[in-house]
Image (cartoon, rainbow, N blue to C red; front, side):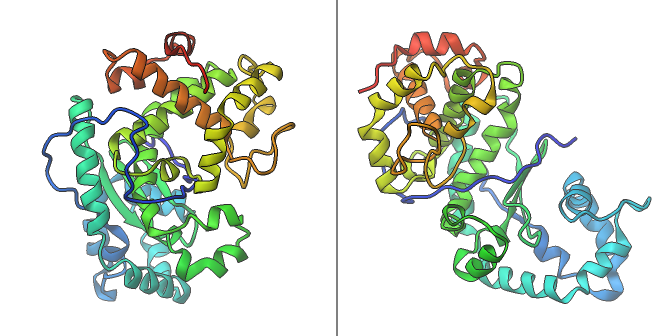
Length: 338
């Protein structure tokens, strides 16, 4: 069953920096994470061995194989669960062959990402004892998807993390500049953890459409990502440049006053508040200056969640993520912007 199928927007900042803006959680030893290289196995198939090789791929990757063919590459389903005819055409398609060679050359090794995932899954297992560590699968989709999530798998679209190679091509696809600058190797890891958080808890705001609920949900996902990646700097968690992070820190009280003045917190019409949650070069909402950071509502939500967890130290990370009473979170956070 497909849980979530989405392109993950990208993060920006300083990788490997320390920041103590929230609690640091203890992990436990887990088996080293290995990313399954679906694209490498697919393009290593010999012409005369297509059908048995595809059967082996299907057995190994299960639902991912099916959704890769039908949803990501839009192959028509013609009663053949292996999509044999279409995949034969794909493997003989010169532009896709070239793309694979470029990606494989650029990503000959993913051990740095695997090491980071192993550490993150140690914390995940310790804090969510009943959770199952997902499989991590790499793929290419001709610049269609950065991350996809399923019940048991998280996919990593490597061709969407190659800014230094494909920057001009990204421009030709009309990707905005604020997005292109983030399509680099160091953002694979935080995007994976963000995808995990989104997939597990995305249903929490399906009924509560208020700005405060959306804001706090996004804040919980940021808190979750930071909890599993404590050594990643806040700029990378948020997708901010250093200048943008400085802006929100210096204007925290002004932002809270702005929401109050606009009477936004309890509005339940997304068209009135989505500009405060969407990514971009800045927050393009009325009354917010162009020198602002993007998605300032997300940052405020994260600050409220941090305050909630500091003021209520008995609350576990799992309990936080399961809590759906956003009014309770706001009240018990006793949030007072600096």
